[in-house]
Length: 111
Length: 124
Image (cartoon, rainbow over all chains, first blue to last red; front, top):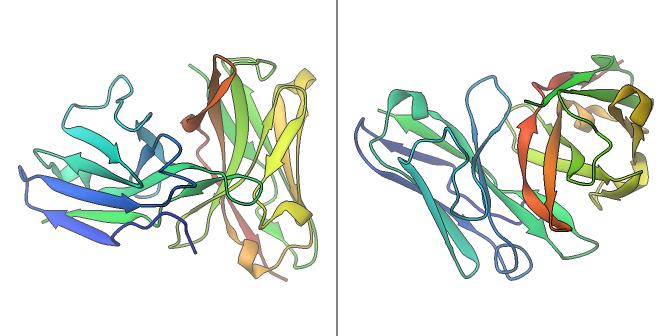
């Protein structure tokens, strides 16, 4: 069972804004920055957001994220068909002896 | 631009050992600025971090797999490897290698480069 909980699905029409939540605890999101990955069908995950709200070069500013307390959110504005993918939050968790944890994943569908 | 490529058998029998290698090109694995990870993904399931290796063999593993996992490095070949012992069908997954960053002596908890992944099936 993952330590980071995401809704299994989210959807929107082209141009809409979609938000994905990631709920954790003090031992993970509450203590460390959050990363978001995008996984297009049949491909490896791709870094989308790091350090809770930073976009790597090449990632459109339609993608934004923030962290507050033990939760984080990813927003996709101006939704496009090629945004249809699985999205995962992730961070370090210092319970037990420490481990990197991924969220349960959210499938974004463009209607 | 660094590239990572996984390689190894696609089929492993139950109770045997899974061995995979990640070849790093376009950058040296012998760097204090990066650490090297294995992650897996079962069919239709989410991502699971297996473990990481940093700087001359320092490792840390997912507690749920720790008793069966070893990650090691071959600096001469610019490769790092995963060994998972006593496999079962539950270990069937796509296995990825990925690079993490160390900045200012602090581990940054994101992976900026990933291999394409390799499917390993555990079956007799």
